[in-house]
Image 1 (cartoon, helix red, strand yellow):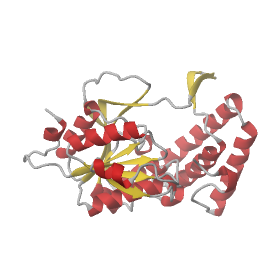
Image 2 (cartoon, one colour; image 1 turned 60 degrees about the vertical axis):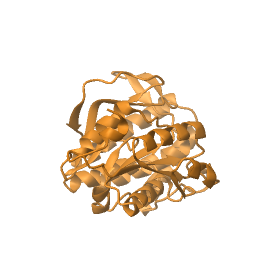
Image 3 (tube, one colour; image 1 turned 135 degrees about the vertical axis):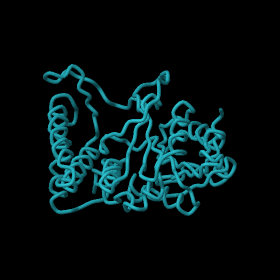
Image 4 (cartoon, rainbow, N blue to C red; image 1 turned 90 degrees about the vertical axis):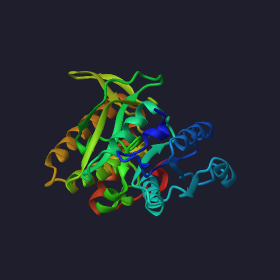
Amino acid sequence: MDLKESARNGSGKPLAWGAFAVLYGPDLLTVARNVAALREAGARVLLVDNTPFRAMSDEWCDARFCDVVRNGNRDGVAGAFEEGFLWAEREGLEWVLILDQSSRVDASWLLPLLDAASTAPDSAALFCPEHVEGRKAVPAGPERIRRVRERAVAANGNLVRVAAWKAVGGFDRALFIDRVDQDFCLKLGCAGYGVFRLMGAKMVRPPGGATFHRFFWRRRQRVANLPPARWYTTTRNRIRVAGRYLFRRPEVAWSEFVHFLREYFCMLLFEDSKTAKIEAVCHALVDCVSGRGGAPSGPRRAP
């Protein structure tokens, strides 16, 4: 069964779905490959260009039969997500796939998502693949659908019901970057929607700049090595999201507090530029109390 044939529901009617990718100075060869794979699957495709300058020309997009929105990093990742869903709503799509520029579209994880969406009840709002960090492809395993904690889902590779996005009020633009996807998934959960992971449908993600160290009883503690600007946004937004769901999801607030302490101590022990990162955390705490959102100001502006 090919991609296009699988994107049908039980009645044989084509599944109304599309995909958008958020780009920031992307590798156009990778983008072109993904667009071709998505078009072969029968998807409408949108590129949300979040770079301050144009990452690709209109002619480049027209030649690949994809739409483009020049967002210019307005409201960061949250703004780009909103532009993607507004486009999906205008196009009359029922489901939309979220991708970033590091994604690699592959049938091994895309087909199970489409199959799950084609028979999903109205209460199912989001399906995501099993994310695997590494550089090489990994074999797919036996597939099983598992309901997951909403805050444990990252946006890349998510297939989302457009009606559910609209029902919960979409993404919070004030968060800009970091915890944008977790906040959205928590909104879905609080509204009674289901968030599911397809175990065995493995999507490989680049390893990034993370390193691993021994931390007390943990033999492999992951250390993200974030720049100061990201320490600002992740601290501010972690506290804001935890406070937002303190009474509806108290386990989320506790988990965020524990994770923050562990990551902060790991930063003090293992990361470089500690002074700048401590200053960013202090600045984030002040802005969180004052209610400031959006992009970091001055030299702390996020990439």
